[in-house]
Image (spheres, protein in one colour):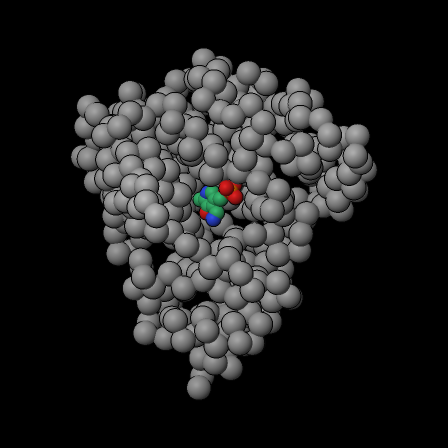
Length: 352
Ligand code: PMP
């Protein structure tokens, strides 16, 4: 038998990324920053109507989704592309603008997929570390800029820190790095309320992504949008598979944006529950980082991993982040009732 093939060097050199991805069913899932009560019932209704042999037999067509999503986000259909989640947005941005060995700047810690896709593409990734108080390392980022910097990938608010930068800081980055594609990943926008989306025609190096995986409760669908000026968007679509978003996802996204009330109510609930979590942490004397998103990072010291495991045994999932921020655990904020349950379990374990 012959030997297995040798992959490209970029793949051989990459550290594997394997998020826990099994056994989450039936538990209180406060580990992945998803919507903890699910999508609008109108989305389900719409997807069910579409589930016919006739519809499933046809390759996806996106005109209606582009019209409706464009109208919702306040851009023209030419100024964005619908993507298979944020992940595909990151991938096509890199495939379109980054050559082998070009430099890509990412923050540390942040969402793992920026580094992942940059490494797959063979780019040289430079990580800029957040300070210990998790303040944004603006000076470090600007100092790291090089003529060969082709992309800067920023989550705003950031995961897992929950911290965010303002428009003045985004503007400074856009102006200092005119030749780099600057991605502002607004996966958690709805909880923060500050967006760079209005600037896609003012800054030709600006890319903004949104997702249906978080507040919209459709992570399984894999749908997002990547916005930029029309000229860039045309290049992005050229580099994208013509059918990468399945038709059910496109249909579901159209239905989702029509139910603004559902989303508004859920955001209100999460913001109230986040306050409840803060109060709970303070009562227990647990240090936490105030967040602009639907998750909060708290400090459990050397109990981080055992605490995560003990909560899991009680049916509550949280995410250990101590491998990147020593002692820290991240909890997704859901409804007040869910956070109350989390706090009850946390309190009984913490005081042992
Ligand atoms: N961006 C950020 C900052 C995230 O934290 C996550 C999920 N953890 C994503 C994007 C994932 O988005 P999607 O499901 O749209 O690929």
